[in-house]
Length: 154
Image 1: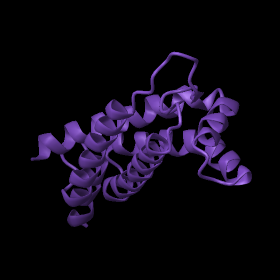
Image 2: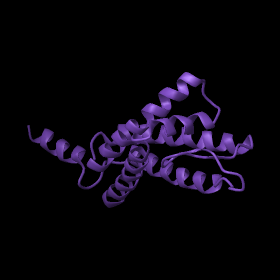
Image 3: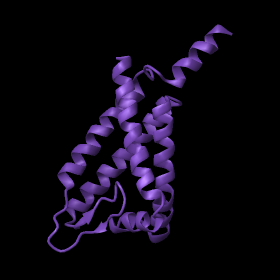
């Protein structure tokens, strides 16, 4: 199981880093993506859109390093659940938007269909990885494991 935890950490952490980095240099587009869901008041959409890339990168780095794995996994699960709710809501309300998960999002061009099913499947799988990590030890090559061993020797 420790190898499975390592793989889950690297996959989930890698996705967070790529998603956050793709939005970090284009905060206006990130805000536009959040706004397109029409779920938050304007000020909240601006705060979430601007802050989300940093949160994603931070979670990704912590998971890849294996530091604060349980906390990072729980926060990841909560964020994935929020994304699933947002995408499901957009689909049910007939919105035609790009999720904005990996960069620019917002309204889709005429004739372009949303890929909500794929996005929900992907986020559902990542939610399962996060839940697995929240319930398991951090796995191999994790700073948490290394620090726990050192703590026991004192």
